[in-house]
Length: 503
Image (cartoon, rainbow, N blue to C red; front, top):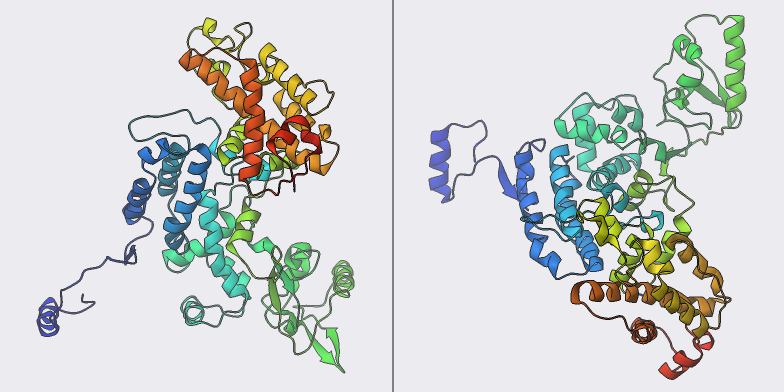
């Protein structure tokens, strides 16, 4: 390809070197070099590749847990390269998220299935009531945050020197320089500079995550960097800032070393008035707690990692952090390591009341006739989650038989949420809790499968068989999950609470 060269000369050289004439943009490692990353066409190859990987037919043969795993693995292998370099346009993000949503809920291009849980909820961490599926927008911002992390650590690589020369770092600290670069430079540099204000309701998610460790003060802006505990001094003392003769000074320029002791010396444009002198005194008292270290370089540490280095995982966790604390303990226990992933996924939907019971299908207009919402098992009450899994006379009997099997006396909760929290209190020891939790998962899963057999295959409920299935499934899951079991199936049937199950 030729850049600023005549076409005739380019043709002659291609004959001489026996090579083809290339054009810009061209593809390299799956990425368009020379293309405009703000155009949707730039990302079309990635979107098409994602569609191919998450084809609808694959969703039909995977369990819910399998689809979650494939979503995250495909995300890692296909999207990371481009998302770590470029900020994806909103239309591209929406297209990718739609493909992933449809795949998660089992849909494909020609059919659309119910999306039972809001996508924003799905993208939360598992301990916060989500599935731990990464949000594309948040993941994109977290990946781009690594450029900030490199600058914070004073990366001396070629790319860093090139950017500083091209966009002019000047006398500012790296953070002030990057923040002020949002309106200047190439489209790529503008995007990197503004990722700090693109987080959903989390402006400053990136810059506020860096903590300044003051050394000699040569790399920190005195007025504009948040280097003392009270925040940015230009905001704290706006009048003094306007009167300062060193608005862009570093900390090192605001004083001198006298016999190994630091002394502040503030340059002013004029003599301060009484009120301004009082503000200066407050400033000096505030700075007494800050110690400079001669000969030691300043450091910018990322507060959310042990070694102070920015990582994509900690950046994403900070950006996507939820303020909901009360439910973390409950949802953390949903993902039981002893139960299959599809059962854990189903239990997650159950706690959120987002499974296709007849009542939920009626609310969404899938069932039209109110007479068709009666319980599939007892045919006496409306089929919602609380009735089907707790108060139905058939499931109530199975619960009571399980409690008797474990030698426990308890009153069943009135709703599924309280019922899940209740079962932790039923176990009197850690050893007993591991086994009983698996029984809870086996019981709700067996109830659901039995309900579907009755509804779609006209099977008759056999309560003895239903209870036997709970016992068999719970034992089977424990033995297949790598647990050290010191008991036989007969011991499990006779005295489950005495069986030693390693946690």
